Each structure stands twice: as structure tokens, then as C-alpha cells.
Amino acid sequence: MVIMPATFDAKQILDLTEGRLAQGMLPEGSGRISTDTRSLDEGDWYLALPGEKFDGHDFLGDAFARGARGTIVAERPSYPIGSQTFPLLAVRDPVAAYQALARSWRKRVNPRVIGITGSSGKTTTKEMCAAVFAAGFRTHKSQANENNEIGVPKTILAMPVDTQVLVVEMAMRARGEIAALAATALPDLGIITNVGVAHLGPLRSIENIIAAKCELLAALSTENGVAIIGKPADDLLAHARTVFKGKMLVFDPAGLREIEVTPEHTVFELDSPAGGQKGSRFVVRAHGLAQLQDAWCAIMAGRQSALDDETIAAGLSSYQTVTGRGNRLVSEFGAVIVDEAYNGNPESVRASVLSFVDSRVFPQPNKYVVLGELAELGEQSRELHRDLGKWLSGINLTALITVGPVARDIADGAAQAKFEVVSCRDQQEAEQVLRSRLSHDSSVLIKGSHCAALDKLVARLVCQPQPDKKVR
Image (cartoon, rainbow, N blue to C red; front, top):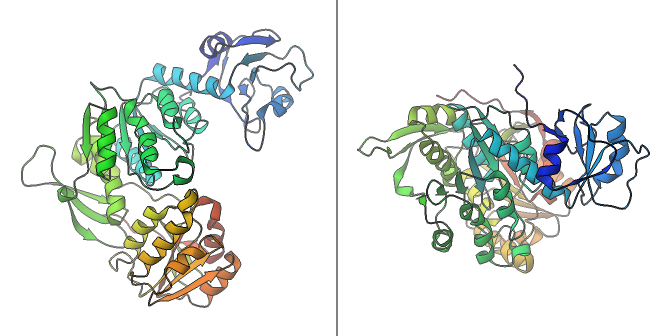
């Protein structure tokens, strides 16, 4: 049975968006909302969104040709389309209209909404939460990087009508952005994985970053909402408690005990919510404290949503690593490639490196760390890159390889390291350096901000995915 996502008729759209009919006649029937004419089906509404690279209003003719029911457009004197009968619904702000439509669908379906933000670990936590909830509920989640003012409404509007739990990732680059996302998704439970210097450039201070992340908690109901903090820090907790007075769960490392660590998984035990000496055991395809904190967030979210530990454990064991966020691949030389190329900041690099040098996780004796630029660090960028290099100089590596002029500061900071440090101009040079060194007894961690595009280097080195072994 096909379970339809959101559909709207013309009157609903005009009422929800406070729009007006600018051209044509109101069509009968309902249709889905599409923001891309390439994937638009006949009978869909086309919502023209402005963008940095493209303006959706330039494709109204394409929407007409593909059989759109009508379009939702910004108020303008004229529109680039020939047919005067094609319905145009004009709104003040197409993005705000998109969010209003999504908020309406969220209310109509009325799932339990799990909102997730943080400086790093958002996607991992989102995937872990989705795995946990899927074991007990009909669950819908954010896809890929749909975590901004466009992606969150898209996620919600794609939600099937019978969804019981909606897991939404929320990103930001400025104050007020998470508040707008939360006003669209209306979360019941909010998770902040951690707060660090990611986005220090646009937000200028760690205090502003904390305040921006805590906008998620401010949107929760004091009576029924639940806040979960994955990495406690005094300044984060202090601000969180000023904006949210309801139930708050904070990670305590004393309550988590590693039982077994292998290259395939980590087995750990958490104190039982019912108390007592015997805890509950969980298995996850993840390693290191940072990712176990992410798993803890997912477990707590499940426990606060009427799932028992047995169901939570079954769901968590099905979690799969996301491409670019720690997935393991194999180079043509037999070396293990750890693909962390999707994004990075100083804190997430440190967390990834600590897991990478754990011989239980990566038993290969030769370990290479490849780092690209860490973006959006503002005026402190050079200092933070160099500090990271100094920290790396105390880690037991075979070599550190940096890629690009910005990442050279990491190499400069590691100048006193006892291992080899190579600063490469570009990815081509880094590839040559690696190819001359890699073998079956090597592992390579590749990480950098998205703008460094180190996924291209990963693709050139990799020959095939490394098969996952069955989780016990």
C-alpha cells in the first residue's frame, strides 16, 4: 500500500501562506509540493524558491510544461511564463510559505518529533535515533543533509501520513535559524549532541554558538518536553537551564561501561532506567567516546518515548555508518580508508583521531591522518588549526598529511612531532604521497570541512567497500 505524503488544495495553500491568486483560476483537487521541476510529477504544486545559485522563478515555464497544478511564487510585477491561465499563487516569502505548509502537515500527522542539533555528531545521532525508533514505531527521518530552512520542510512534507516518530536534524550558521526550524518541526524532544567552535566565524563567540543551539530547547514544552545533552559543559548546561525548565537528561560517563571493542563494533553497558546493579547491554557499529555519547542520546530518546531497552538495543544494532562520517573502505593497496571527509571541526577531528589510534579498532601498525581545511573558524582560524597540530604532535601516528594552504597551519603546529609531517599543496600531491606509503598494514583517516572536498581523494584511493561483519 502506498502511503501518501503531504498534499494540499489551492484554498489550503492560500489560507496557510496568506497568499493570493495572482494569475489564472484556482484549480480543483490536491497535489504535493515540489521545489524542483526535474522531479516534479503531473499534478504537483511547484514552489519557486530563491537560492544562492538558482532562482526557482526562472523555471516556471518548465513547471507548466511538466503539468504542474500551479505554482507558488513570490510577489512580483511579472513572471517569466507565457500562459496567462496557469495558476500562480503569490506569497510574501516562498521560504516562509514552505515552512508554514510543513508546519501544517506536522500538526496534521502529529508524530512524536525528535529534534537534533550540535556542533558535530548531528547526522550520526539522527541515524542512531532513527534506527532505535524504527524498531518500535513507524519512523521518518531527515535524508542526507536536509537540515536547513529548506531541508527541514522538505523532510516534513515527505513524511507519510501514518508516521509515528519524526527524527529531524537541525543545522545553523546564525542566531535565530534553529528557532525557525523548531517553529516548523515543533519538537517534543530536543537533543544537543555537543557545542564547540564549529561556526565560530559567523557567530563570533562560543557563547553565541551555545545560545543558537539552545534555541531548540527553548521550543520545547516545559510540561511534556525532554532535553538531552550528549556532552556536558558548564557553560552549555547553564544556558540550557535558563531557556528550558523541563526535564533534562545529561550524559554521565560513569554510567557507561565498555564491555568489548572490536573493529566491527563496541559493546557497552548502561545503567538500567529502573535502577539496580545490572545494567542493559547495547551493541553499536561505532567507536570512541564521542560516538558512544551519540548512541547514549539515541538510547535516552528511546527510553523517554516508551521503548524498552530490549527494543532499543535491537534498533541500535541495525545502525549503519553514513558515507563520509566514519565509513570504512579499502584502497587498492589493501589499506583501510576511514572516510570522514563530509565535514570537520577541531573537536570532531580530535574525537576521530582518538578512535583511529585505538589498536582494538584499527589494528594496522601504520596510521596516517590526512586533514583538510576546517572552515568557518573566523579570526581564530590560524590559531585553532595550529593548536590542533600541536595536539596531534603528541599522538602516536606514522604520518600527518595536510592538504591545501589553510590546513598547512595544522602541519606547522605539529612541527615538533616525532612522526613524519607532510604539507601538500593539493589533493593530487597528497594522493602521490599516500600511494608511495600505503600497504595492507596501513590505515588512513581522511577528514576536513565539506569545502575541502576530500571525498574526491577518498574516491581516488578506494577500490571497494570493506564488508561489515555481522554484529553479535
